Image (tube, rainbow, N blue to C red; front, side, top):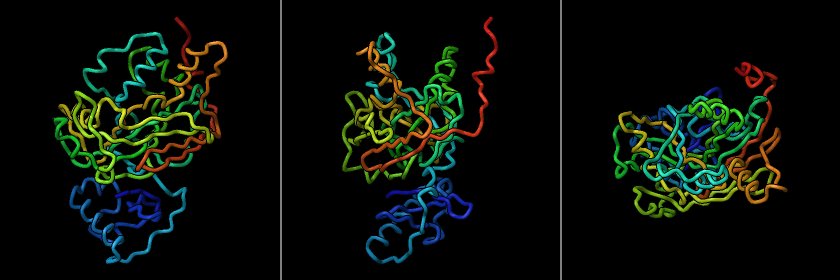
Length: 337
């Protein structure tokens, strides 16, 4: 099942995406909550009701007209997440990034999965990504997959954690690298370099739809993994390609870590972290290392189109735009002591 959120009047409406059309689930069955947040908190009962609607529409036992939804009315599937974390699951990306900086692979990567909290109020869906002047100082994308939690839990073993996943999405963890690198010199963050836009979409795809793509976790790891191709284009040029199946740490293991001593809630979004080759930071570093004389680094610019695609999860398209402001926090840094 594919679920969406879309603008209907002034509301972020929950919809069922089926055969290219969007159906208002609450209009078809008033027992189904009208918003994604309320739907997720309603749990399996609401999910079963939505599946019944999907089944009825498919077999003809239920008649309903889809809503006419303009493309720019599509929101993030979870437009108001209860929190947003991002992981660090792909060894290939971590190894490459460290190799490009001339440092050894950190052994702790293989001991436990890590994550950070990002700004859940900056989550958005397809469309324009508004950036401030300082964001354009080495502006970057990050190609990722993400999950949304479907039920509350605490201290969840990885062996049980897949049952807490309500669905999967594409994630683009937008990054302002100059801001990010400056603040991380103080060993805290990322903060301002990551808090202006996290893109998810276009659908929330329920786990049952991914069963044909399920593969074993990597040796020594626990939980489901999936053979899902990942691609990113910038202005029509393919710049990144990977696979969700390359995750070393599974989402189940990341959930175990997230839930230790803390509640996870329906509507929590958790990203995988960047796939190998999944950002300009890594690609530029590799290019400069292999051809230091001739390589020219690339960063996102105003007007660029970023298109991401993951098998079975859809296509997510955004355009980079500039906010109508010249305000710069970089320009307000205090003098050197």
